[in-house]
Length: 98
Image (cartoon, rainbow, N blue to C red; front, side, top):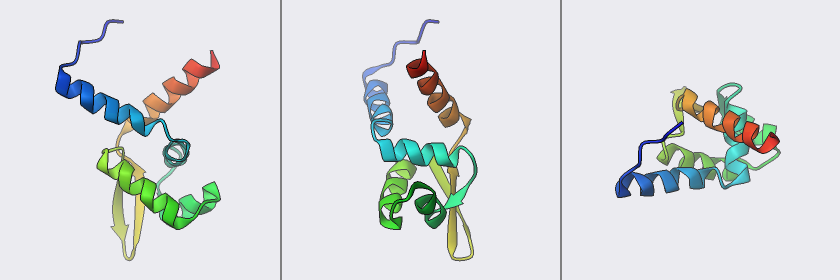
């Protein structure tokens, strides 16, 4: 498969995008959200981490357009922004398991 050669601006964007996947906590959060949408507390409980640590990473993931949130009363529920994220995680896992 041949890739279209990206221009300089898109190379910078891609580098920033792939940096997201260089952090174990962010991968754990994305993997958890691939199963179902969750609030910060549920993610924190699932990963045995603090709400503060999860909120910090979710903020970064939102900036990178990898997750989105919707409010239900006082609670914000987070989910993956689109199916591309699951594809990227799945292909990365397949690659390292070969």
